[in-house]
Amino acid sequence: MQWTTPQERRKLGQARRKQIGRQQHDQLRAKTRPATSLQLLEHSMRGRVASLVKLKYELMAESPFAYFRGAAPVMATDFSVTPSTGIISQLCGDAHVRNLGAFAAPDGRLVFDINDFDETIRGPFEWDLKRMAASLVLAGRAAGHKEGAARRAVEACIERYSAQMRAFARMPLLEVGRFQVHRIGMAKPVHAALLKAERATPMHTLEQLTEPRSTDLSAPRHFKEAKPMLTRVSASQAAAVLASLGTYRATLEPQRQHLLSLYRPIDVAFKVVGTGSVGLRDYCIYLEGNGPGDPLFLQIKEETASAYAPYLPDAQSPHHNGQRVADGQRAMQVQTDPFLGWTHIGARTFLVRQLNDHKGSIELDDLAGGGLSAYAEVCGELLARGHARSGDPLVIAGYLGSGGGFAQSLAKFGCAYADRTEKDWEDLCRSRKRRNRS
Image (cartoon, rainbow, N blue to C red; front, side):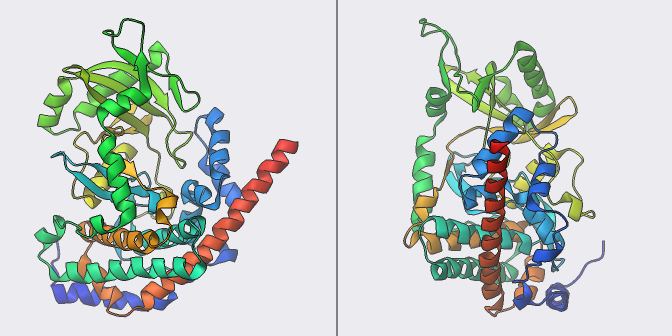
């Protein structure tokens, strides 16, 4: 391995300004998209559960922001035809305002961080920032903000990101790895998410997702039927899901393997989650430890290749997409789900994690008033921490420098891409109307 000095690493970042200037990130090459948004979405549906594809389109048609949540493959394609810095870090891949949330750390404390990594991959750091910028504009519009306020929120996000990255570039690397974001409690939307997470206990999940099997209340409970969102599976499906726990167990640390061995599986169900993941196979296992008052819910979530993978052929990524997601999550988060692992069922690859254990996310209504800019700063700081942990803060800081042109450029991009998203959403809605008439 060839070692470089801190000065050389900073200069490497500065040199990348020749590749794309900091004020050139507002570029959006509308005419170079290699296929229509509808064609790109249709391609991304291949291999999904056919009966749920219609549901995914229905969810995406609810609003431009809902469309944006399910259209990561479209944005990945748009990124592929625009210049990039080539400065690589681990990407969340689907950085938007609702993919940050509260959850329980291994020591039981509630933390707030990026919490969705289905699209994670190593790629140009600014792709996460651009997706977050567009999401802030779309969320701002949905929450009733004027365009100027949404633009200022993006600038606040990127300025906070840049300031924090410059601070990381001056810190010892070990301190960067364990850095805690302290402004979280100051943002009202984050506070609301933490309150939700406080209530989302395993016993609350037990009441929400299961019901007694019979009038004998001492008998183990089982999953409720709430089709298509929650469906009981056949005995053979349940057996295949439970058999996958053997492979999963080997991906855990020894102390977690022991803890898992004390829980016994009670029931298995199929669950529809999110927007982008609708149509992929997602199973929940209900387990009991020390009796009915000690439930554990595991989610076994199908993972396919990242939407960015076709455009990042040099990205070092495990062949197993469940492992790709777990590795990306561990790279970017300071505190990670202790039951995070991966497995396979047949040829399909899956991520395994806890379901709803003290988890809470924001709602778009939480971003009304001053909530948008305060939350945007938190988004910027958390993305900076994730990129600094998994990339090189000196290189990124060298590229960013001390000016505000980068933030202004990304604010322009966010507004332009929000406009494009609204047009793509309208195309989807018209397409659905035509299909319904035919």
